Length: 338
Image 1 (tube, helix red, strand yellow):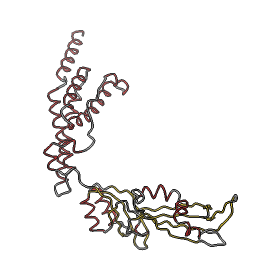
Image 2 (cartoon, one colour; image 1 turned 120 degrees about the vertical axis):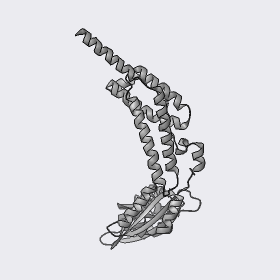
Image 3 (cartoon, one colour; image 1 turned 120 degrees about the horizontal axis):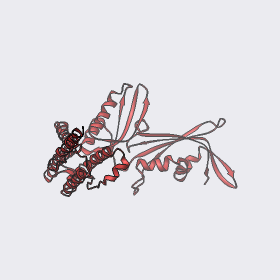
């Protein structure tokens, strides 16, 4: 029985030695993984074309295959010596380039997962004392070779624009536009839908590569945005006896203001406190909606049951195709009389 136990132990030790960490194979897998990452980044950076998706899929498949190979190698790690050997390979590899450092940052996460598995708990995994030699790239161009940098235009101009379209409640045109946005990595900043009776009007404020935006504007119409958005603010006020009265105020950027025509400015200044903004800039018109009262010895304009609505649109837009809207019930408010 003792002889049998000894043979089992010897066989187990022999098996562990046979599955010791393969440094050369690991280094080869790292190079393949890096190349797959670089080719994927290159495909992403290319302009949209007939072969774009095919090139990206092929590069991504190669990267996935290399990642699986690395995971298979890491699954053979069982001892502190193996972890140390793997870390040494990673440190050497990371020092060679930004692409290598990015690759190592990804592989180190896999290595920590293996350490966690071996030691059963994440807290115990800290005892393996894994270091961080990797450095994730901050921009895609850091992952490209010099040849790739020459072949692809990294700094594709990105612009903002506003477009609108009419659609039925089946949303066929709307869904098509959203697919275009997704396919070309356009970012929707704000959108709004207005009920136009039989048809709905959808307004979009978005950003994307200039050549994509130009094509969309050519098809749908619209405007490029350069801090020149405008807003229409509607104030409705009045009581049961006096009746309701409404006025529309057009707010446009002033010359020399770099932020006034931006959506963030309309939301943080006008929408946040419309009565204050309009009393400072459109007092005479605003005062016609209320009545003069004396409060604590000061003359005030009382606006009863006030409701403020705001629509933001392009410089050539209207309420119908606004891409942003809001409504606030302000109640009874007082404005300093002049």
